[in-house]
Image 1 (cartoon, rainbow, N blue to C red):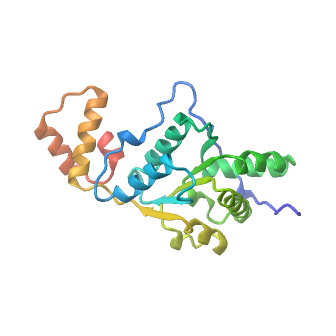
Image 2: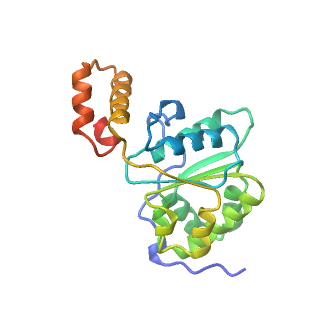
Image 3: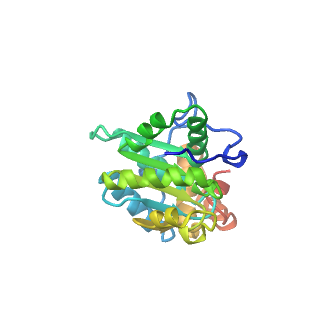
Length: 229
């Protein structure tokens, strides 16, 4: 068929590598995720997806910045890579997906692009909100979703808002994104923040008195990245 037209807004400024570069931190695991009432459904769903890919697809996790969305996607990807199912799992950002799609369009490499992403056992895409207004990439993702769902493959997405707020998405894509499981994560409440502080201290080898941990968890209330800093 005719290739959709592309515009400058389809082209991101830069795209990172799909896999962690040498020397980069290890990808997160699900076992290191601190569960609380604001993220319980998302964690349980992520564990189910990691355990039985294809049972819940697509899985969409949404919420504000630094509440654990990327941690869960990395955890699912890590579990899939360690499984004995020999499943191909690809984890990337929506910006990378867009960049590679545009590159394929310009270089007449669409067949290879489609073989790569429509042939995986699990596809995880982070920061889905990046696709807002990028119609050509949205149409490509729509067909990718349809192919993978039809074949019982696993899709996992993360975004900073629920599908109903994707006003710059095509109605068809927004509908597909709600076709499986949609989980919201809110900022962690005090008990979860305290658990995050305790786990961070252990990971960094820092001895923090209990009263200091309580002070940090009570004062820094925005998100996990703030607690880590």
